[in-house]
Image 1 (tube, rainbow, N blue to C red):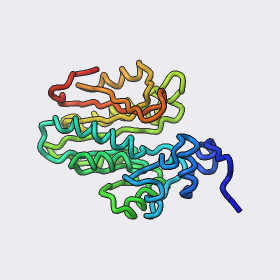
Image 2 (tube, rainbow, N blue to C red; image 1 turned 180 degrees about the vertical axis):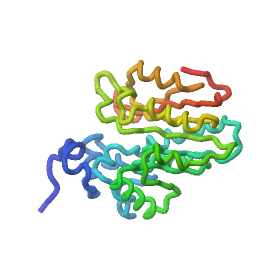
Image 3 (cartoon, helix red, strand yellow; image 1 turned 60 degrees about the horizontal axis):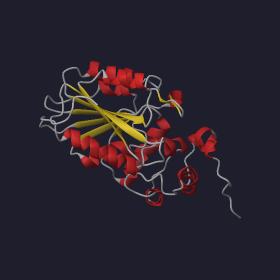
Image 4 (tube, helix red, strand yellow; image 1 turned 30 degrees about the vertical axis):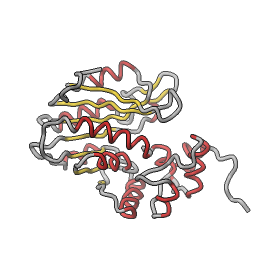
Length: 263
């Protein structure tokens, strides 16, 4: 007897009881198949779903939906590394993921640059599973069960250390498919997060990496970029047009050489 529901309802995974449930492998693969035509869509930690699942890694339904998959994480890591390579500071950079979730973006950034890293996750269920995954896969990732504000109060930075902040708060109702992503309506607003980071580390050289959507409300993008000395955008053509993710790279306290000040 086949116990698997058919057809698989994506909304059940997004909004229903599966949202906070640990998924079976077939559910992870069915989500990838039904939503993106690829059963291996939720590839994380450099592994296909069957491989990370066999090694003991597990995801909640909402983490499977929200996590940065390998293809996107790899692209982000490469672009972060390109900017970091232009920074004159000599100490190892510190990478901080303020909303770490599965930890896959932090994992990929650390694969591309030699750095120390830490991530903050306030949700105890997500934190516990991610910590379990990190232990099961022996990943070089450290996470702390804390929100970004309390977590950053305990972060110390060396004088010659570049501080890299990956910022990807929950989008909630900030994303409208017709008008795009409003960075002022994320939870919390991206601009509030950047302001807190700049106030917390006013005398350090910073690189902020903010995850965005292919379409962003221009006013909200303008407000974000106004906070940096230099900024640029990258959109990754990995999904169908109009449904792609990307990043804004913004620096404070330094300007990458050989690159324009702004787009």
